[in-house]
Image (cartoon, rainbow, N blue to C red; front, side, top):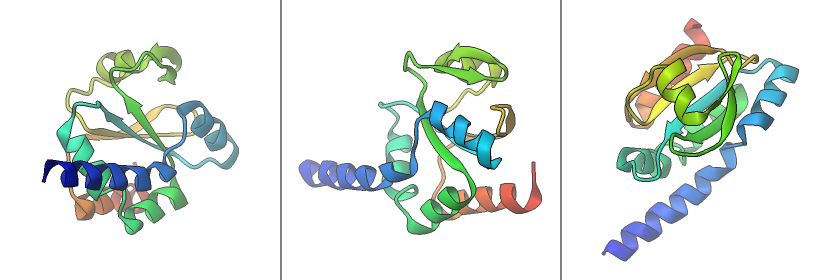
Length: 142
């Protein structure tokens, strides 16, 4: 049974990978087309993050909404990656905890085409909750 659950999560996560692009590439594309970035902060050990990856980000409605309106990025809060955050080059963890002052994972941040934070939300949610969040961003603004 454990093997089947692992296989399900692995297949689901693989299918959702297509929406995610590297941070630097997303920022470059955003500067060209002015689409905002949708950033998910996660950790490998975060079970709610894994569940969302398997069940929410693999959903075709969520994928379509994100890819049509945003550049999607996943950032591991424990990585050594340096990103452009609020006008500074920082480690992902420093951006997450110090600049954005986020405390829970998963966390979701909408960035403008210059990499400045517009809106953030922390906590796991289902497909409907994610679609509500995305549509609120798109139709009600920041």
